[in-house]
Length: 194
Image (cartoon, rainbow, N blue to C red; front, side, top):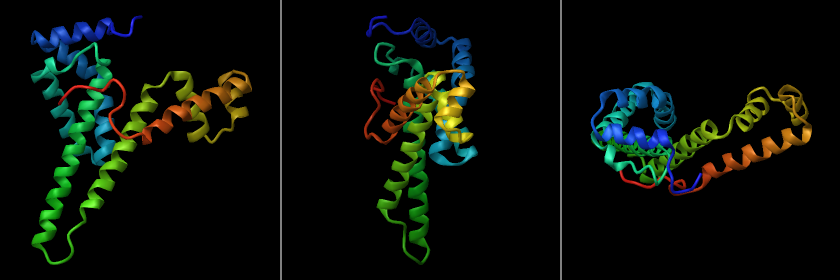
């Protein structure tokens, strides 16, 4: 597939959303709501706040479908980017509210650096979560076995029914992808404004 040709489903969905088809929003919600909620929760650490961001993301998708360009990135990537931006903004707003409240009360207000550190940490965690959920299933399954079930590469190979070399390769590739979570800036293909 040519790089500048977006996936057919993404193009059709963007067109349907632009026409105002409520059924299209329902399909997008059914497909991506778990991802949106998971990313928002990863940033905010709170189910209620993640629910709010999830509503905001799908409201944005409904109100501004033209901000998505299928030639720039897959719909999933664009939705993850919108989610991340809105969740980080909500986190900043919440921390700013805490800072203003602390200034009214006696005591030392939280430092601006602490807020930025929190935002950076949440961003890395959200990006790692997105990377894990986006990687090919064979790599994700190998990492899940190694990390959650504490299997070494030999046990992972046996569990997956692959050679030890293949298990090492999957683990190495999965970890290399996951290591990019610490990269700063916008992930490739995540252009566009919120």
